[in-house]
Image (tube, rainbow, N blue to C red; front, top):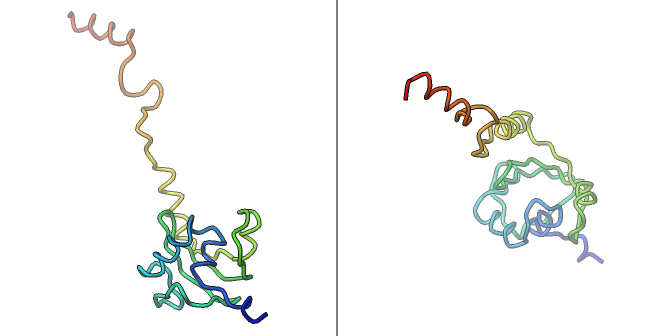
Length: 128
């Protein structure tokens, strides 16, 4: 059973649900978005328990420590048991700031454009 002891980094990142597809995980490895000890890793690199990886996804820059090997994709609630998120606090603060300042395009109620009654009052005041 020595074959089960080997697990590729692209398959691991897909199994713990950092990427939607295995090909996305493989492309991230090839484009330098997955690093081990600050050095770009190939998709074929084997993962071992205790190793730390820097992973850049569209939403977040992860820093994870492998706590267990996961060979198949499972539910998120179970997948989070196979890695430890050691993302620096400044990255988490940056994400919270971005989320707080996210603009939906809708204006807040009662702010901005005048209501119909306010518009009539303005027109009366201006004498139009």
